[in-house]
Image 1 (cartoon, rainbow, N blue to C red):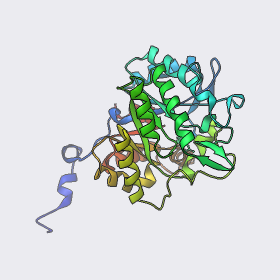
Image 2 (image 1 turned 180 degrees about the horizontal axis):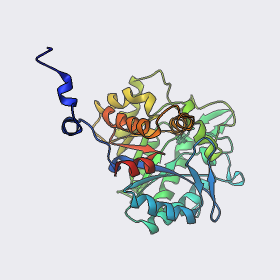
Image 3 (image 1 turned 90 degrees about the vertical axis):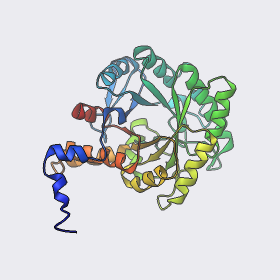
Length: 324
Ligand code: PBG
């Protein structure tokens, strides 16, 4: 009790603060999501995500060299699929020469040590903009996971290190795991979007990939933001099904969930600081209302304190530059 205890004793200098600091953010904690598109020398800005671009494969190669040079060791790949290749069943997902497959090959042939994770979900490929096959305005579960498993297998053939199912269909992790094992891909990891909430924060991302749902919303498969226990159920089931890494998404609205899961499971946890979170900070700092770097680092550190092992963030390059 005061004055025997004075909390400020441990805060009086940068040196003592560093000594007693409980969490640190390092470049090892950062994963960069990348948007890939067709073409040559294409670098298209994304409206609500200043500083982020859709890039063609030639520029992607340069980008991954830069990223690796900054110390970032993992990327998460998303592709912008042209409308002419979209259909209800996501046929293009398993094209061995599809954009995702070529992107993986290009990255691996440029920086072979980079951890390459691929998004596994139908929405960028779906004529309905949904993460699953649609019938009578319903999203079908079991037929979808068959496609997702073949998609994951195709990514494994292309050289992906991890596949990252972001669709929230039931049983997809088990189906993908079984498919990979049968094909002899014993060492391909699965990073499962386990606790993925239905969220308005995905808006800018859907603009980036032109992947907004054509009807309805995603509440029949993504989680209700009201729920906490369900996040643990989803996550433990994914681990039982064969997930190596589990994810919570969005980040800043779900720090309690990150902690809850950290206290319940032993596998690594990723947090996805999503497009809308990025957009909010960019907008506020452009207006001069928030100090960009301070708020960015504060948020990233909060993910670590909540219990995340690493963070998928569009700020990865900016953060890596600041903390190096
Ligand atoms: C879709 C997917 C989404 C994101 C990652 N994968 C959007 C959605 O579920 O509609 C969002 C990422 C972001 O907002 O940065 N499978």
